[in-house]
Length: 382
Image (cartoon, rainbow, N blue to C red):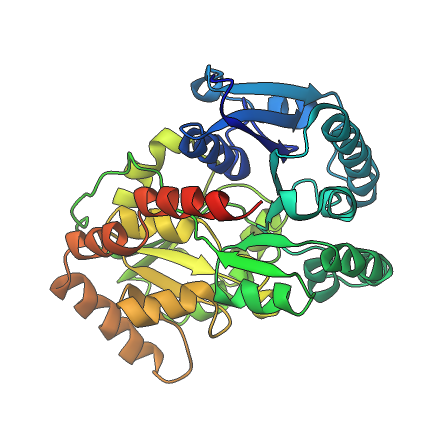
């Protein structure tokens, strides 16, 4: 580390050795910015080690990591309490250790971090917003969950009004954050894993793959109802991963008597090329209530691996616009009958090669493009 470099603090409950998407992205962001900044990280010890994998254990000489030993649980209310503990502790560390010229990059993990930091660090602080809480809780919950979201919403909105700098993942997210009166909002999209390989389309039935968190915000139950109408002799649906909605989806498939839907467990990051290579379409699905509240990072991995996207969700989201504007797959809507849409999928596989999608990725969504954007951003902001 050079003593002449400005310090850049990264604050996230998830970091090394975790190999979750948030941690994986932040480790690469630290790598991008280490050329120009002295990187210091404040992370949650319990959360990061709970999801630890050996492949992500090495600490770079370009970064210093300070772990806060805060509990990590899945209960929503306790997550808020323990997340607030982490957020306050991280704020105390920053107030004690950071200097006036230092830059701070924080993420919305834990969700309480944005409740605290904007009140103390002004224009030196940038938030990388991956999801918008408690808006997602209000729109997707009932009973106590929605009550809690509505109770917390004024406090969050007040913190957002104190936030000067935010990075969001797409135009739809920018619309939502702008309504909260954040001063400076930049769009810097996610990117794919660079080691993904392009493979030819497999033979046999057309395979649709959903890979990732199987939660209640992905709209998978509605997609399965739609998929039921397709000819099971011609199509397969593979769902890989874990999540709170998985059991319900398995039961739904059994009740519907579907024999062409297959469930698989979680997978490691280094298995993605093989997993994506076995499909013809990568499914990106979102509940209709999720407009502007997040951008699924799986979208970038799908096109980087040379696969078209099958999008199922609200109109005019970041993924919807990208698929439509760059011809990166198909969008499910009510315009076509099931038979017509089945034909469109078959024709697309026959007429467009995997290399087409990978080339679009390299031109518009590559890791190098994001790296340049982040470096340019921190030269003039934060």
